[in-house]
Length: 267
Image 1: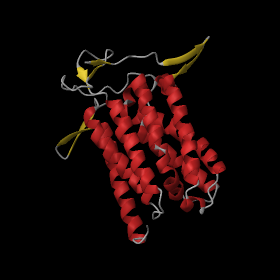
Image 2: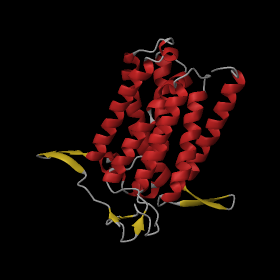
Image 3: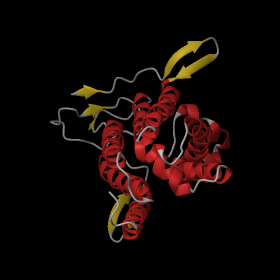
């Protein structure tokens, strides 16, 4: 049976200064955003809209603020409000891990809305542009969670070849859920979105595929992750992550319906 390697979360230490793997994974996410963005700007249907590399760099600055502030506030408010309100100094300790994707998503929406207003771009034009650039960054963040030994999976059958003991939790075999989420919510969603967005699509459609796709992927992979807490919905017990993913699925489906109703003949 596999055992979580429990690597040192500090990648490099120089005197009192330390660089953590979790932070490096976020840096990797931002680099991937720029690299993939430059490829996307060369796609003919994107280039004709007048997007520039400078726009990507500006959006990244705003997006970093949205991810960090929204992601941390989401972690505090959606998952552990009692703990953080009792230990308010730890709210800013993002280097220790603990970022909510749903909170980060809302933070990015606000940040892109501000950027779009300043540059005379509609919010959803911006979101249609950057949606395919997000999933691989998300995957990098989940690898950071795995290195930090965060988000342990539910107990698994010991016969599962990749069942893993997390020494910081217990001696039971568990699903390596951060790896599942990196692969499904991250890499798989990236492949789907990248292929879909390579051709011209109706306004709102790419954002719709992202929202619905991530919501469905996250709802599925949450079955393998130890829930932060669970709620009853319509007689079903679901995790907090699944509850927060449901609105994304609904919004994604609505965006797709509007997109193709307005432009049914779009390629």
